[in-house]
Length: 185
Image (cartoon, rainbow, N blue to C red; front, side):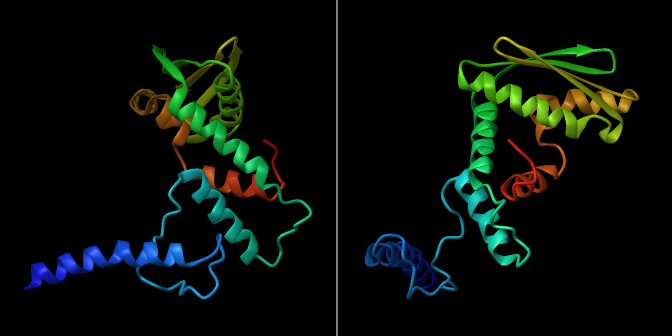
């Protein structure tokens, strides 16, 4: 009996969500119960979700200066993040105290690599005893990251380029600053 009830609940959820979606015009959610447990929490796409979250925070903050808000700059940055994470080629070479990363890509990916590595270089240099330098190349950039000691060098090697790019919780702050018009893409 429990299995039958569980199966019925599982089948009912998508039907309820679909019926709610079909029943409204456009994206007007008026009349829908926002607290309804059958509503999905995720937006379905990470960049859209990040923008949605930032817009909600801006709307909730009475100090938001709407004359400076630039959500399009945040979107452009999220496109760069997507290009680098999904389309960049990375060759990693150990160097004394850390790693050298030759990051390359074609067309727009190369431009995204340059923007992302330059931006990240400024945030990474000096963090946790790390030192970073970036130089542009025809197809992207070269990033060299070294540490103050053997443990830091080992961590740099273990994290690799993508781990280093995602290390720390500075991305969320960076996204808010960008959306508020306090930092340019």
